[in-house]
Length: 538
Image (cartoon, rainbow, N blue to C red; front, side, top):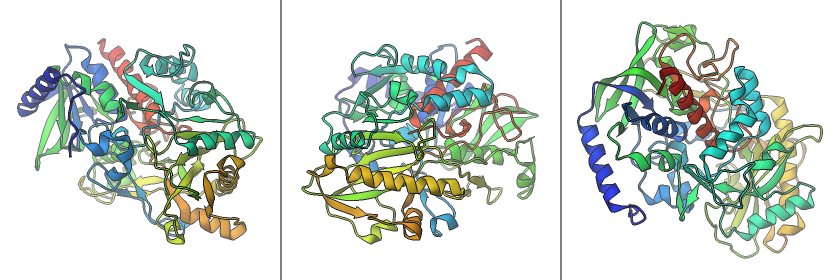
């Protein structure tokens, strides 16, 4: 079932559909800029480049359109997991998770992850951005500059707050409307535990050692407002922006050390499209390093295993994989309470140890049971809710490895969750805090009791943690920005050692940000477009 377009101007719909049909039916042999991936960051890059009418931009997306109930209805986001709009990645069996091979969903289609995620707008902590600036050696990545950029891109629907919030940008941000009583109870429970609460989950809370607040969401007029919808959808009628769906990128084609074109599969046929100025990879933290390796950019020893000629030796490609890992705890409702909005309306950041300066734990209230495949077997209530809580600053690092020289083959994803002993220690503190929060007085009128994990300790608690662990779907850091030997891009997001190739997605993060990653990806896209504009005097 496809949603209608009654909220849009009928003439714009007709004009933009005719324009894209014309542009995609007569593809040019080359474009000024080719942006690979129409997700959270790629949509931003494509829009900013196409704002110059003299520039021809091609935006490639492997998936399809986003005009469907499953995307635009905020409450239906879980129906996309494992479906056509999900790449459907699965990590390798992990001995630290009792041998489990966990699913790692990533968005496939216009909007990428921003079209299938939980719509949370979380800016990242001050310490994240200052760390980015330190790693890059460039103050433009620091918190104060990023805060200014957030103010410029937001169209915040809450109370005016000119220091922290903006109201004239493309990204419509609002708090959960008429939140579920369970979300309000989470804030009351946080205060019982001595955790401060804030009027907004962004702003001052992101400069504090922790806190709790209602969630900021990308929902407009009751519909998902993905970053594709915010940036690209309104300019589909422009003649200098071609949006090509169903286009699966295979590799970058080099002329010497210059990225000259993109090899892709379209309607079952392999074709090559050139880039006169630059190529931007915005395919996400799994696909971007995969394309780099198949293109000859990566660890030369790994590439040689599959007969791939090395264009540039960058051993950090595919390394440093990070993600937030969660350990859900579940309670049964005293009386059923249907989910509202996205079904996740409150957030908390806190510390696993009092001596920490910044939060290292992340809590999201989910208004339905959200177990792992293992913990589901313990038995679930017919009506219940989950504290989806986990590690905001994991120490474990995974890696990606090629399985063959064929770009159509999948990668080996070694997520390596809980491999660092410090993460298991933090996970224990996380579950204990989760239970204290969910069993606080604030929840007593709403719940019948705790379902899992119960009062576990020692080996039994560790076993539960390993069985319960799932991803937050925040895969990142596999082509990191920095200045050491394992860095893949510099401060301007240019790939080291080659020309005309940049990366703009979560893979460039030196470490995963504190909280959901789509807002930081918007910043990465804005920064990339700004730096491209400076380089080419656009």
